[in-house]
View (tube, rainbow, N blue to C red):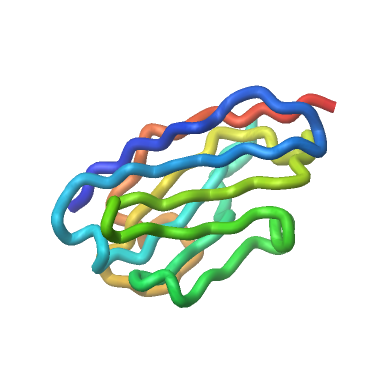
Length: 124
């Protein structure tokens, strides 16, 4: 398994941007599919974005499509979530997750490793 640590969360006004980073430990990082999930207060954790092991394929939740971009740098063991045009409804704790089976799943049960989460708050 890999160990994951997120950073980059914070408070931003609606329409602003944030860049979340997920640093992974372990030599096998490049073999994992990676994803971001988020959990708003009082709600279940939901899928946000996924990127395959090479970075050649990505997919997004409809709610963030066109505003968020996921990318990875396998040389630096890092996954990035660039969030633009933020809305108050994007407020949540954002989690980075790794899937060693590279299933392409958008369901959290498919993911083996999770970070501790980083808080994103968007004010109106």
